[in-house]
Image (cartoon, rainbow, N blue to C red; front, top):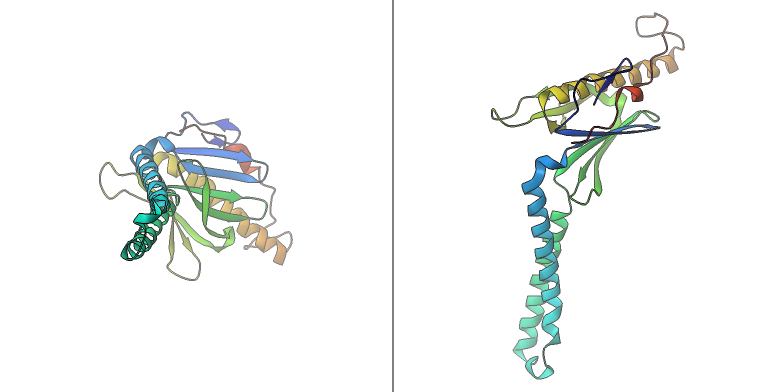
Length: 217
């Protein structure tokens, strides 16, 4: 749930899960929304393992049966089963859930995929100052989740970040916008210490990590 100005939000997040630490915060798509994807991931992984084992076990046949054209057939089946099994296993391990990691220490955002075993696979990273805008898109259908996306400076590239309940994404959107503005202010202070873009003195900002606490999905 969110904390704004030291006050806890009225409701907990359901479609998202948040975690905080000393250097920033991470937000995950809630695992309960991906039951079918999780089942498909387990099925693909087990199928891949079975095919890899089948590629090896066929060589344990009696030596009398492995001769002549049978050797060529076995080699072909080994390559086919092994390659297919590895492809299925690695496809299943790529993860179906998204996550975003905001590091306030080095002012960077990292995106990743998360699999059913909660292992992350990094996909992108960029500085907060590279972000031009943060916005929310409606789902393609009435019951589809909304999407939080980023647009980077110097181009029209849009980076999908998370999907979830629109109200929850709006809370995260507000927090990200504040962090992006803060990163830009810090960059300006390095160029012109003690002043913002308008020349007005800067004021200390409250710690943003205090506004976000863990929310169980």
